[in-house]
Image 1 (cartoon, rainbow, N blue to C red):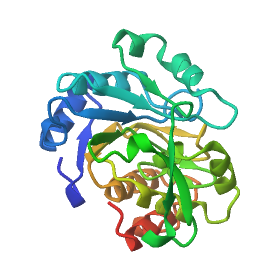
Image 2: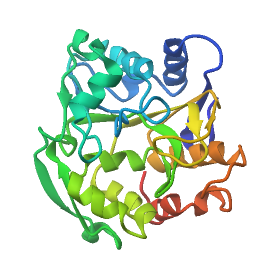
Image 3: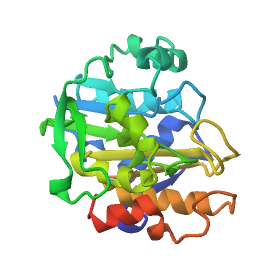
Image 4: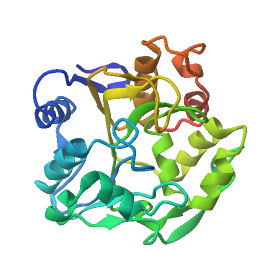
Amino acid sequence: MQGKNNITITDASIGAIEDTIRTALQTHGGLKKFISEGDQVLLKPNFNTGDPFPASTNPDFLLTIAKLVLELTPNVSIIESSMFRLKTEDVINKIMGDRLKKLEIPLITELDFQYTDIDLKSLGAQHLKKVKLPNQILDPETKIILLPCLKTHFVAHYTGALKLAVGFMGKKQRIRMHMSRSVPEKVAELNLGYKPDLIIMDARKIFVTKGPMKGRIESPQKVLVGSNRNSIDIEGVKIIQSYGADNKLQDRKPKEVRTVKRALELEIE
């Protein structure tokens, strides 16, 4: 169905995931609305750790979207940086096996990042005033597709489309940020530094407590599609809240959740 704020929410309870994703994208205008033939496309999953879905991106979800994008352009890469002390390529290979290699999709990890200093303060940030982001996501000709999971997070309160950008940060700055009392606001402000073209959120299974690596699992069986990070996250927060679990989202209206609220103040899309 077409939800508020131009977000498509599709039921994934029946049929194969490929059919669900195709339906979701077609309902939202089709993949060609966002990608043209020959475009350079970066897919950003969630492989912060090697823990199984919904802690990490579901392999079939990623493969399905990769194949759909490959139908339009051969120039597809996965971009990711796992948590400190983990080698990203090892984490991805643990989860994906050789399936990405069979599709000949290259990995771009922190070992390949060439960072540019971004002055976030000049863009309105108050909590995260500067950040280093990889040049690969700053190229205006490159299309970026975010593939977030949906889950609670014991520090950031939740993980969605906005939080996914933390994987672009240098690992040392990432650690320092997570030790701050203003992590939710910093997550929002980080997103001033770049703009994705499309978000496809896998909310078939989610964490509604703890997170990001483990927690109580629920199964909303939804796939969300949109191009506005904050709108996607607002709908995701509503889904988490619908279970009435013990987490840091339950006592707030969706638009008052700290990351969402700050992103709204900054007019982040």
